[in-house]
Length: 122
Image (cartoon, rainbow, N blue to C red; front, side):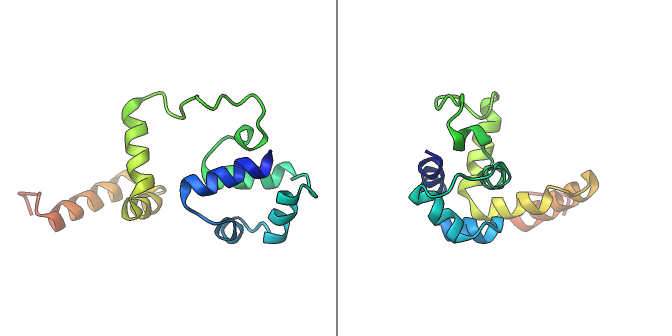
């Protein structure tokens, strides 16, 4: 069950197990053993994978996870998250902006508007 859910996430997000391995530090041999059923993943590794995919650990374990449950209560948040996920450039900007100060975010927004030619004050 663990690997099937992991494999589903990889397919949905268009990533390979090797890419996940490199990003999480979990050895590909561990994932292979997991796939063969030779290995029950430790919670620490499940959490790393869940964090990588931004899903609850319960999704990977299958415990009390309602597959129809939406991740977002707010429809606009779901729409924005989907656009960020689908657009590599937006994902890069989002990652870079995650720890930025409000002032830096405003400066970056002004710069992007200037680059796009949508800021009349430029």
